[in-house]
Length: 228
Image (cartoon, rainbow, N blue to C red; front, side, top):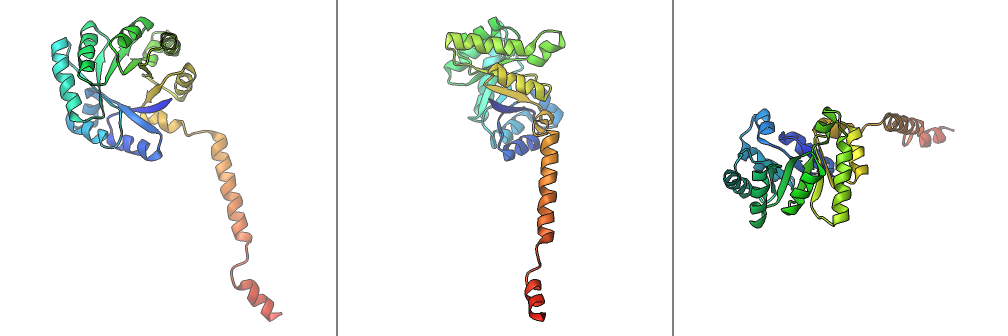
């Protein structure tokens, strides 16, 4: 399962890339506005250090989405255009796909919606697990069901588990068979943590220091031998 960051903060993406664990980014105009940057400028900056950067249309009508989607895709070859799971969004996604533009169908909340995304040849479908959990439904069950349906139908569209809220969600997404999980930077950092790892590293370092302290200083043993 590939790890994406759900952020528009360049420094977070840069850190994840430097760690060697981040393969992409999902973002939208709201996240970019919160980061205090121009939409186009920030998407281009992020595309410069990582592939697979989803940039979202904000129009509602098919023709407007097409114009906007083509403009987003022109910014960089790494851009994946996000369209909503609506009739107009699906129609726009189909047309964008014919142009050779990769499409991410977002705001998916059912297997049937995921099948519609697959029907237009979407590159990615994004079920929002956390938002389903918020209304007392099983978000990761949906991810698992979409993965199962896609495998039975030999569908190539990638399943991206979105609205990830915790490290537990990441584990569940992997066990459900998701191709990608996108998460906030805070959740990514938590994936490194385990008390036994921290305790073990501390013990290793303490033991190493003891061995170094026990070593004779170079030249001291020879000098002592000469005096004898």
